[in-house]
Structures are given as structure tokens and as C-alpha cells.
Amino acid sequence: MLCALVMAGLLGVVLVDEVRLDLRHARAVATVQEVRPTKGLGASLVVRYLPRGRQGTTTVQVQQAFYDSDHRVGSTVNIEYDPANPSRARIAGDHDIASVVVVFGIPAAVGWLWWRLRHRRRPGRRG
Image (cartoon, rainbow, N blue to C red):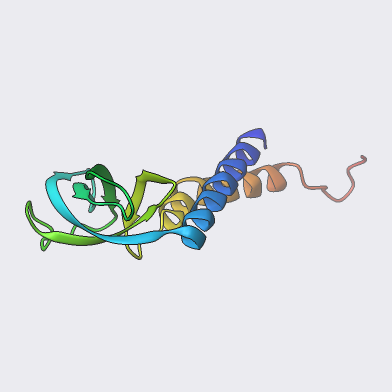
């Protein structure tokens, strides 16, 4: 039960973080500097862009849930970033919440269901 509560809490923290970025993001065009394939279908892109109102470029690493072969070194990608913290960015339109639900939400739900089934009241049982 404790594990399910911890996972649900982590899911809540990530959800709040995602909503904050959704509400106050800025957009920019970034240039791909490096592509790092990850285990599974995704990739990690190292991109460089110029945040609005700042001097100098910012280099960040963004995750791509499903690798798109159009993203090669030198190509461009639209990103969303936090103007107050330009190192916090994501590919425009991508949301971390889907992967978090899979990683934390589903195991939390399974753990909760297992706990409920294990501790349900049985006919003829006192308590």
C-alpha cells in the first residue's frame, strides 16, 4: 500500500510540473546537436536554441518517446521551454505525463488492486 501511495505522489508531482510548463512555456526552433538512441523506441536529442530575450544559446537534452528518423544532427525541431529556466525544455507537443502514467500509475493501480483483493472481507470472517 505504501508503495502505491509513493508512486501516486510521484505521479502528482510530475503532473503539476507538466501543467506549469503547459501554462507558461515559450516556443523556439532548436538545432539538433546529437542523437542518443535509448532502450526501446525512443531517443534523447541534444539540441541548441536561443531563448527569447537572452543572449547566447542554451543546450539541453530532450526526450523523444518514439524516435523520428527526421531528427538528425543539424536538423531543426520545435521545442517548448520555461522562460524562467531555459534549461527546462521538451519537444513541442510532447508531454512527459504519458510515460509517467505507464511507469508509475499502472504499477500503483496494480499494487492498490492487489492490496484490496488481499484485504477484502470474506463471508463468515469477523473484523
